Length: 139
Image (cartoon, rainbow, N blue to C red; front, top):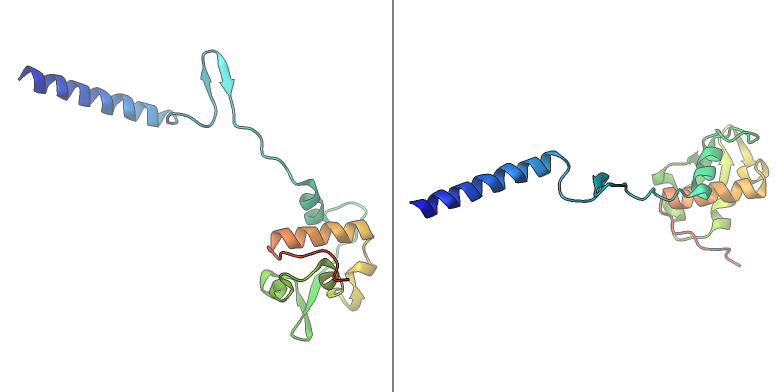
């Protein structure tokens, strides 16, 4: 009887302390205080090239025009979306750049309205955002 009583106490203690540990964040990771030191997770590295390209693409970058992006897909110009960019997967940056148009001015290439650097930021953003796997130039 005494042995089963001890087992019951140990089981109860394990459940009690186990649920307390889970209620306070579990056993590790994340922030916390241990031995007088505060631990916090390392901050994630920000891809500044991606973020710059995103802000240019969305028209939020100061000094850059707000543009509406279209791409040639099956012979017609359609707005840039994941589905419309599928045809450009595993091609190269130049091919995509030569097929990006301003939807508001259908005969105008985006590359003619942005600086070279801004165009590269946008191409990098589109490549990473839509997982296109673009290569360098095709030459």
